Length: 355
Ligand code: MRU
Image (cartoon, rainbow, N blue to C red; front, top):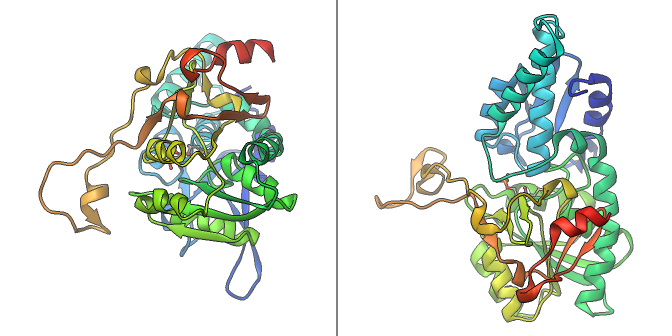
């Protein structure tokens, strides 16, 4: 089933971003270009100035593409990983190299484990391929209502978001950005403030780009300006994505998310996490049990290969954990999860069991 390439092809072809070039012409940017035995990934590090694709011939290439941020965002990582394995298997002979199903299954299991080079992100790859865009649209519609209700304002909303959770991070539409898209589509969004999102600038390069392509009014800020933006009265609610949600609702997401939650609480603003159910990890008890990926110090000390920082030690976690108590609600395609336990904690396993 993992290399049911027909289905993968259909799904992958929907993985795209619509944008307009300087002349106003519409371009379709596909996250992946996939056909049986062949995979190319959009080189996201070059966006928004250059659009190019890199060839992925198997799981080794995909592992490097994931590690080096050619493809990023939890759902997109899962999609790239599984498609790369599909290509590898086709190139190797469509299963003829295995003596029986058990051997094939073991090989696939081993390669999938190998592919988890950015371990903070969790996602059910198969389910993601099948359902991601539809799930994101559900999530977006549901989230739009929840956020509008919690913000308690009648005028169109001003959202703040972090990192990139849109079409470039998922199979399409997006999670937190899907909520923004649903609000925009229903005339309930005034503006999105997007953070630059250091050190990889996913907000400046990718989120701002997606919002501009959709014609959504957007304002870009440096990460350190978020609390001041809230104090200035320019934010009604914060919506972010997730790389992993623990059983108690603690949420790992791009570094800086925790600071946004603290600032939102201080300003009395609703703070929502938008994530597909494949990102929920009921097997992980709490945030303290989530291993956080440390990135290369050069992401901070260097800019395009040139050192821009003094010679001191660097601490560069890719993600942080926002405590459940700071999260107003977790928006999924299966419904809104609200805190239900003492101390503002969530019961994610109970939510999953009940749906
Ligand atoms: O380091 P990245 O770019 O992979 O980090 C991405 C995020 O933190 C996103 O918020 C998260 O993966 C959700 S994407 C729908």
